Length: 41
Image (tube, rainbow, N blue to C red):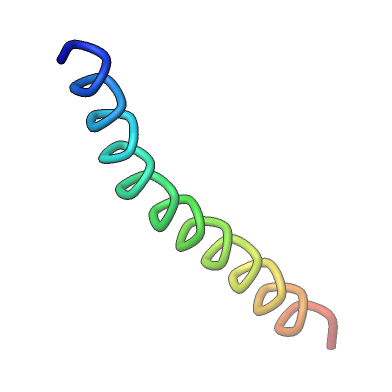
């Protein structure tokens, strides 16, 4: 029961954190590329 609860919490945290990380990484790279394109010319 306790182990099952820990696994459930772990999966729940993964489901929340992974998309957030992906969005943050995409935003960071997008901003970097945009900034480089604007200041490069």
